[in-house]
Amino acid sequence: MAVKTVGVIGAGTMGNGIAQVFAQSGFSVMLVDIAKPMLERARASIEKSLARFVDKDKLSAADRDATLARLTTTTAIDRLTVADFVVEAIVEQAEAKGALFTSLDAIIRPEVIFASNTSSISITVIGAATKRPDKVLGMHFMNPVPLMPLVELIRGQRTSADSMRTASDLAVALGKTPIEAADYPGFIANRILMPMINEAIYALMEGVGTAEAIDGVMKLGMNHPMGPLTLADFIGLDVCLAILNVLHDGFGDPKYRPCPLLRRMVAAGLLGRKSGQGFYTY
Image (tube, rainbow, N blue to C red):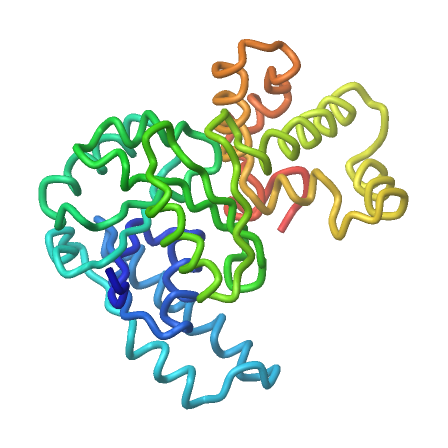
């Protein structure tokens, strides 16, 4: 089936980035969120992102306008009946994702593929909430979506080869590089990244070094573009904690136990960039 119209559910940072790259690549996009203010912020964010591309001569003004013309926002999920492909980018909670996919399964054509942007939750479990588990897969974009080339593709226990091929072809059409991962907690990216971030937080908590020192060592000694604590602030400390909990619960291995300092910071509402305060002040 030719994909022309893409539904994106969830207008947070990842959702608006995913909507932008699909619209930029010529697809009609319907961005859905239950909160109208989120949709308004998402559209403003997309406009600002496209403006930066224009300012840097990476996008023409005409292409910017065409991209925005291909983007529709709505709070009505039943408008997705016209979608040829759906990407979910809501909160990182298995129960919420499962409930959403069950609802989508009832209203969207049976041949349509559902992709989850989950960064750690089992695609097999999400797919089991539908009557089309062969058409459910993971399509994990990296933040910021318009700039990062990787799309991690995750095959659930019952995901078909045809579904994976369609998602891979779409990723290439977006100018991304698809890399397949098996359906284990955290997949590849976060199974490796989150323990590093967690260890950096332990090092800070134990006084091994300041946040600046820890990040400086990783940037100057390991050639990382940003240090792990800066990256944690960028991702969101609540998201980091959620992913570490999935890893800890999924593997039952104490090496994935979230650092107590991370738990305290999330409980205190110190979530990083989005709250204005994390390991650094913004």
